[in-house]
Amino acid sequence: MNNLKEISIDDLSFNPFNKIGKEWFLITSGNINNYNTMTASWGMMGFLWGKPVINCFVRPQRYTFDFIEKNDLFTISFFESDKKDALTFCGTKSGRDYDKAKETGLTPLDVDNCVTFSEASLVFVCKKMYTQNFEKNNFLEDDNVEKWYANNDFHKSYIGEIIKVYSK
Image (cartoon, rainbow, N blue to C red; front, top):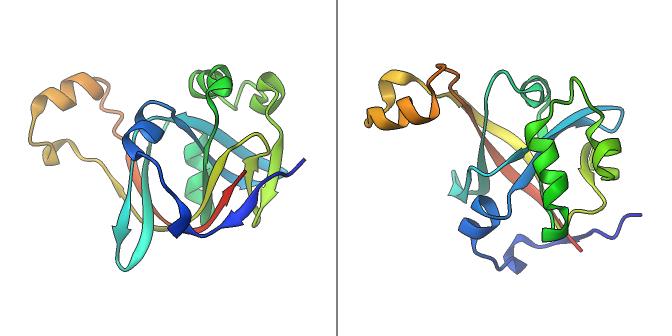
């Protein structure tokens, strides 16, 4: 069941540090018949090039990487705290090996030719605007490379224009 309603981005009021870093979110790309989702706890929101944006990061070995590379749209979906186990599963298991919706009880939902989940409390539909790979020589602190990229599996950054917002 779809309880999501489109709202204006101007109606949002939350702490992005908590929303992203503590509550986490799902990045999903593809269509209702062929998609993947993954949990993320790194990201940024703001205003860039005259548009509201979100910046998320995906490592190339993640299955979702292939979907976000091939599609112009992706969703960012936030959930209430009772879905933390589902988010943990989606962040630690691969869609190559598991049907994440089936395993977690999340219900895929088509929104604007992209996918979110009916259990989401807040959804951003995003259009890719800019991508860039992290590169070792651009890090100014070697500690970050050693701590986060011991295998040289650098993230790719995706800046997406938030084109629609849905909320419960």
